[in-house]
Image (cartoon, rainbow, N blue to C red; front, side, top):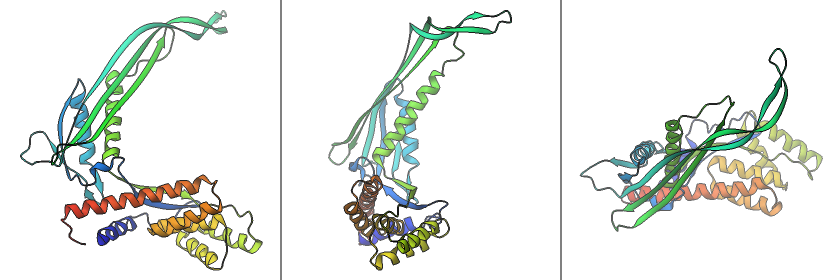
Length: 318
């Protein structure tokens, strides 16, 4: 497992943008956010089963496309089986989806012209009650995954969406197309299912901390120079911050930025240690709490990836 974990880190480090270059006072962080449902870490193949309801078939197509497209570290994440197949999947995904469209008359206030001049230019407006037509599109979907080896449901989720549009007499607007709205709802649901079932690689620009309050003048000057260096050479900025820390400089901005540097290098245990120290120095900064959560999620994502690879290759590489 150790070798597999190291391979995942190496793959992250090899992404093209991991040069450390940035265009502002930021460091580019790349990582792996875990699936929101932990039950799929060892699921290699998924069959798309029956999806009932008036829009179930369309949702099944959307889900199949989204799951098939998932790649993590340049490897296809799921073997997606659509329709009938002689291959026995690890799990089967099924469900239902239905959208309903209802329209009814209503009355609402609208600002309207009540007086015009001889040139038909409006010279007086007021709020008046006008006849309107309201359209409501309601969407409901339910999805479950059943594991083949023991028949257990490892995922059950409900999804809902609703869009209302009201057009009144005299409005200069048109109805949004029903089919377009429903297709968007189906697409959003499929994306939510994808996020539940599989991890996601990400690339984010995280701002460094720049506050120098409490530093001596020499420390502040050196720290500011390192902050500016992030625009040209992030690796050098990190070296400067590490040098300051090794010279016994103590400040929450420095500690946090050293953690950010470690996180960028893929040294997650070291990054977490710096962030915990920064939190001890200043527990009120939201950036620190967000960083701790991000690294924790990244560690869990890599751990689940390691387990998945171990199961997939029968323990080879341990």
